[in-house]
Image (cartoon, rainbow, N blue to C red):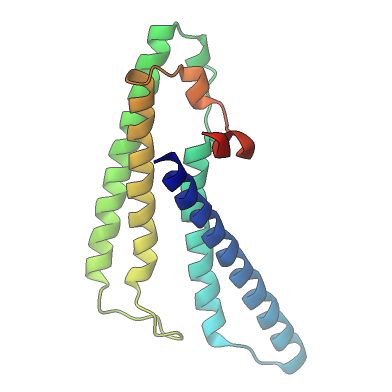
Length: 172
């Protein structure tokens, strides 16, 4: 199971890299074309925008997995062990609730924009909201996994909030 998850997250990293490369290449090419030839690709702005959105949302999944998201733990680390577990669980439940809201909202927007197309590329608009749906489900599962690790696998809160480096993530 661990190998499957590592392969899945390696795939996410590859998608992030592809989105970044596509965004850089298209924006750079468009700048050069506009500067030198006074023209550009109209569709490249839409593709770069979609790439940026997926870059951010997939990067958020990676940040949640590796505990590299923004977290202020000054109160959490000052509590007793039981207080830490309780507050950490409460935070993970809050994350789950927010991700359920995000997932439901994204799904609703996907359905609402099912027949709409982007102007220059003709791509379906719901593809944008799919990124929110994917992120919501993924972070929801990661937060539930954190609760499982805390209460069932008996990990400490300190272990769960410490950012993982890449070498440690591949060894798990």
